Length: 266
Image (tube, rainbow, N blue to C red):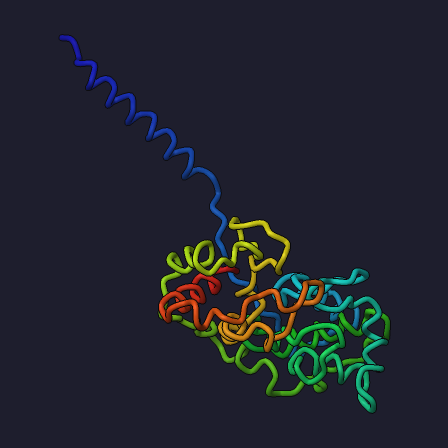
């Protein structure tokens, strides 16, 4: 009895798919996890251990390297080389340690000349460092040109309260369509003419927005679209280029769609 060609082909296809499925399932799976929270309260930590932990936070959860460089001037924020000693000169009567702590949890209290007020409070969403992480990060910044002497008690007990409250920070929901917002970004909004956003665009005229939702709050993003000059100009880019008329040219739906798209850029 001859087996029809169609049946042979079906059996062969099933065997091939089964082989691929077996192979795929035999590969160890890597579980994706959010950044692990650091807790140092009550522990005996040496300054060296603290600095090492702070450097890791600087490079990972703190997302500091998106804007800051050490030994190289950045386009968004100042060079942090030597900041441990330089911090003592920022505000009269304020120690370097106090200034560094204030710069992390109240960045708007002092704006370095030549740079816009774009830094978010790192103990609040979207970054959300807890008190231990703020302590370690401050120690790392102190180590850049000075002696590490920050203590946990130097960090206000209210700092990082939202991050340490247990559970994830509630995600801000904007009543917009991110897919439609991507079209506004590339089309009517004309954003692509100046900005890069992930795989979209490549223009260096304006700042790269590929991680804007990771370093800025929804409030900042919403205000920046409507009042770009009022929210400051990113250092290294020409002022007054971003049109201040989006509030008039975009409909309410297009605006919320655009914001929703920008909030996906992490």
